[in-house]
Length: 121
Picture (cartoon, helix red, strand yellow):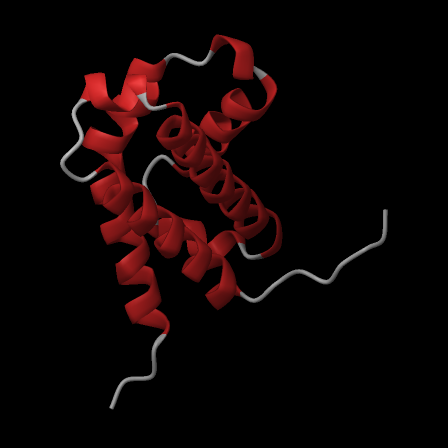
């Protein structure tokens, strides 16, 4: 495995925002029964949550000061680890609950961090 330089803070934040927006867009108008019965949607949402968790892990490792604006940052990384390493026991209700109750607030927190990094006029 080759060593790669860490990406910029802005790229990690963009990954977080893009993945969050995609999950919310993909699940818009879908109820739990629709989510649970759609294997492709579940796989996509789980993949996007792994991207969110990995971007958070990388931010924590390379740019930890930027996690102060994200509540439950450690839980987000732990959630990614569960999806990746305990994939056989994933509870669709837990994923769905995160989409419905946690993701909108997370996206708002990331948006604020991105705005704070933009130059002020």
